[in-house]
Length: 133
Figure (spheres, rainbow, N blue to C red):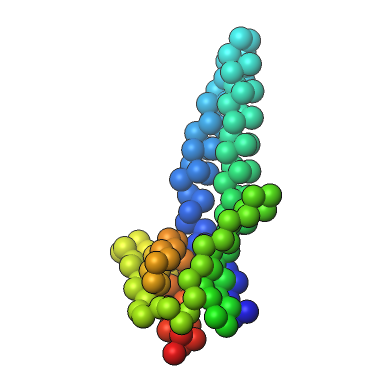
C-alpha cells in the first residue's frame, strides 16, 4: 500500500456548523426554561448526533493507493468501495478552487473515479501517474 489517507478536514465544516446552530438553539431553549427546555434538550441531542455522525463518516472514508488500484473506501458496517485499476488510467486531473489551493485540498479525477476533498491532490496525482506507468 502506497497511500492510505482520509479526505481533507474541510468536509467537516458544514456539518459541524449545523451542529453548532443546533447546540445554540438547544442552549437558548434550556435558558428559557419549561416548556422550551424540552425542545432545547432535543436540539442538543440533534447537535450531538449530527457532529458524531459527521466525524464518524469522515473517519471511515479513506483514499487508498495500492500497487495496482486507486480506491475510495467508505463505511464500517456497510462497506462501500469504488476503485479504478492503475493500468486503466490514461490521465489524472486535479481541480482546485482558490480556497482549495489555500487550504491544500482538491478533487482528483482518475479514469472513471472522481474523489472530492483530497488532501494534497497534486501529490496523489503524481503518485498515481508514477504507478500507472
